[in-house]
Image (cartoon, rainbow, N blue to C red; front, side):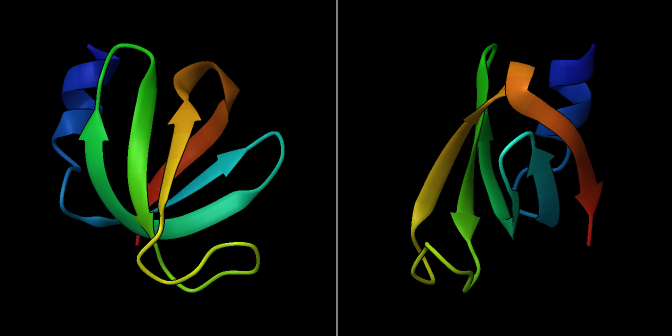
Length: 64
């Protein structure tokens, strides 16, 4: 159920908070264990880079 809800956010601007960082960008894909986001310009990531975050580490995902 959560996977389907997350898949509805694909191609939308989101903010993802994990135990280590908060990343904003475009949600590219969602699978059973992780999400992939094309990052906005943030410290540690170049604009247009991709971050893969495991679902178990995500605190929240919100639509921007």
